[in-house]
Image 1 (cartoon, helix red, strand yellow):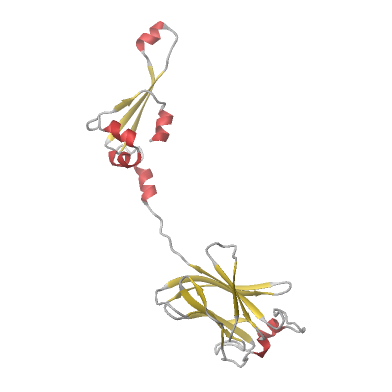
Image 2 (tube, rainbow, N blue to C red; image 1 turned 60 degrees about the vertical axis):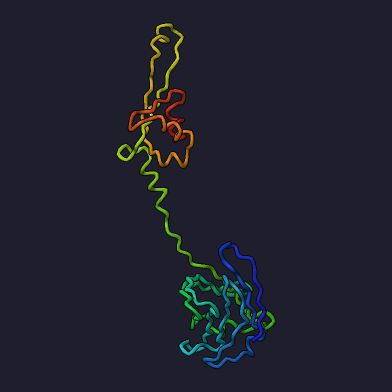
Length: 234
């Protein structure tokens, strides 16, 4: 049947949310197994629609409405999180699902909600507005994003003496007002940091250039920076 479909804003930026309205819900075919199809709508490069069974699906319990989300186009496997629900005057009903949509297939609920409770006892119906039932349908990709081990691998290499191929020796000299101390040029702090030439070539051109002046594991002495500052630089 012709249905009114409106995309609405979702609080979840990854979710596409739609209002799908079926007019004159009570007049739709209500025998068990009979189906009403919504108009199609586009989402994630595919066409979708709602399969509504106002009197229930063949496997539904008596008096239950069945609702399914159907993918109408595309053959690539999609992992989808979806939600279907509706709002009443004082309450909200929502069901959540997660399924693999492989080709044209539908997933949903044979026992979505009680038909009598949707219609209600009053003239307007418990979940009906001017006789129409509006379903809100949310769809989002159930993306699997594998963890990238590169960052943890890099951290393990940081200052690792066994794998390093270059050593920095940071010597912080303390100045003194006494002449004897100035003559001795006394060094109070010496700190060794182990690094990797390949990594420095890609992330620090300045330190990589300094490494070019050193052969093997002979420490490269740096005296114009505090050890804690060089640590952050490295």
